[in-house]
Length: 245
Image 1 (cartoon, helix red, strand yellow):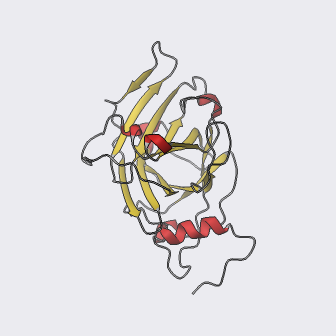
Image 2 (image 1 turned 45 degrees about the vertical axis):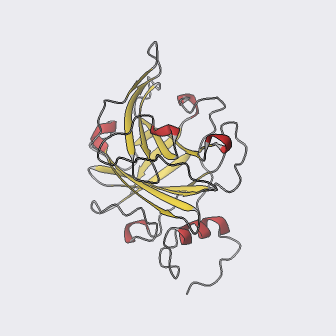
């Protein structure tokens, strides 16, 4: 068994990993960091989605912390981690998301888009590769039940366009640990669908990461880069995704 974590490790992150399937320290990741850049680490080949931080392809991968509300204040008990990997064809995102209450769609569908999935519990990634027109980007969501929706966004249009008919061909996987009150969601996004093909180390995209969590009476809105707005659709606040070796 792994010895008790020392002070240089973030104890909350360790607990999150344990809650999503960590056993005996075999999948301990490097300490997540507070940064404006999510480093996506190259994988040798594509791999099966597991929504499990203890899976071999997620071992040792450093993530970023998502724990602040839209104004930048800490959201207690919801300190989330997001990790990323990439291959020649796909971008992978893994969300590790603690919760106090679940708010789930009563009739989940996992074979087609669930429009307005954001009204329930979700993890979200907004990704844009047009650095000249930052109001155009793509939106990807996964729920604790494995529901999904992807959209093409144009906030410069009048009225703003949120095209739910757009189809990226991405895939998701999710699972819930109700005992530990943590759910994990994983995305595999074709790089071609977001304009990052062919990929290369050093390539960047604009990115923000979010969660909507809990029932309407206790709704939590959590973001990586605080939007300072009533809407997550504030591209001026985005950070960066960077493909690394």
